[in-house]
Image (cartoon, rainbow, N blue to C red; front, top):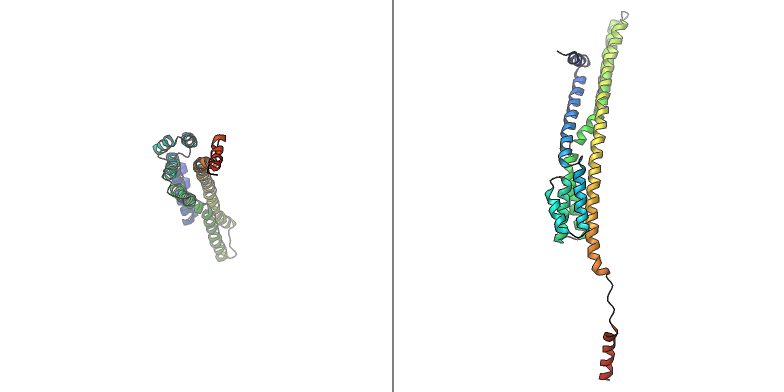
Amino acid sequence: MPPIIERLIGLLQIGGPVVAILAAMSVLVATLLLVKLWQFYAAGLFSRRSQSHAEQVVSAWQAGDNEYATTEARRRREPLGQMLASTAKHLQAGRLSSRELNEELSREANARLAPLRSQLRTIELVAGLAPLLGLLGTVLGMITAFQAMELAGNQVDPATLSGGIWQALLTTAVGLAVAMPAMVIHNFLERRVEHYATGMADCVGRMLTASRAAELIPALAPVPKPSAAASAQPLELARARG
């Protein structure tokens, strides 16, 4: 058996069930990290190509080439591409008011982002719970050490007492060792999701703005002034009638 494995087994035996629980929590965080990294990679969170494709779709929509933008958005399988395709679909249908459209797109965006945000609370819970478990193990260990000192009376062995104390403090060290990486992992994953959500909201908002601007163009177009001949016709008719 490798020395490192023997040392880990020794720490588990010394720390007791609290260290065993903390070790299981560290394995859980490592597993969730690998799962989320694979999920983020499949969703395009680490891909510049996905963002570049979204920019092409939005630019085409802003230029008025709605068919090309819709076709390109439907080709993508990641949440951003699906969200742009859904936005184009609603805008082309024109069945919803501005308020209803915003609510529907917000609901769809949250539904597509929910799988990316899943299990992040579990990692956050481990980051907050691990130090408390370590402190609990230390308190229990100190209680045991002082009970042994009380039972020994005047024949207290300082070496035994110090050994019991460092064994008790071991759980706090393990708890902190589990909590700090878990906190870093949680912040990293959460920031990636929030950055992705911000980019999604920006792309959808630009498509909505382009569509509303296109609708306002006919309304804001200047009304052509009547020509001089056309203006004179009503006057001539009035004189003829007079």
